[in-house]
Image (tube, rainbow, N blue to C red; front, side):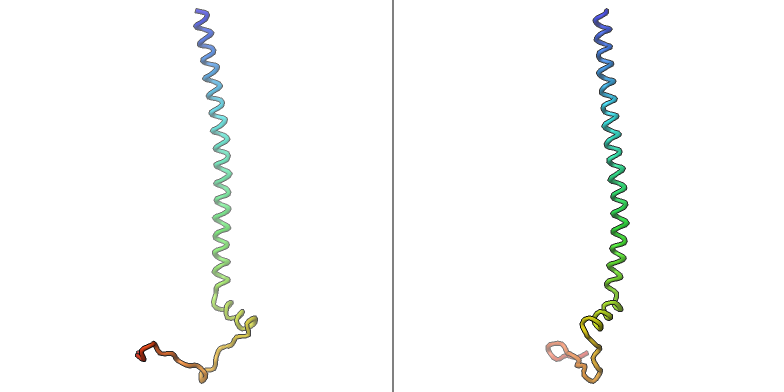
Length: 92
């Protein structure tokens, strides 16, 4: 009877240590998941900001301003403009 009680006590201790260990691992993994989810939210916000910035950089007025100021480009006069026709000479 004493051996059975000792064996059962030992089994209970081992099982309880297993439960504590698994709960601790689960909490650690959950904390890591929360950290990564927060990082994902931050990256989504940053991605949205970068998309907005990209659309701002590619606007026609900005490109025209850079062409005029940095590249010294200008709109051609209408009398100097030449209309191109497709190869084959067909006009529409």
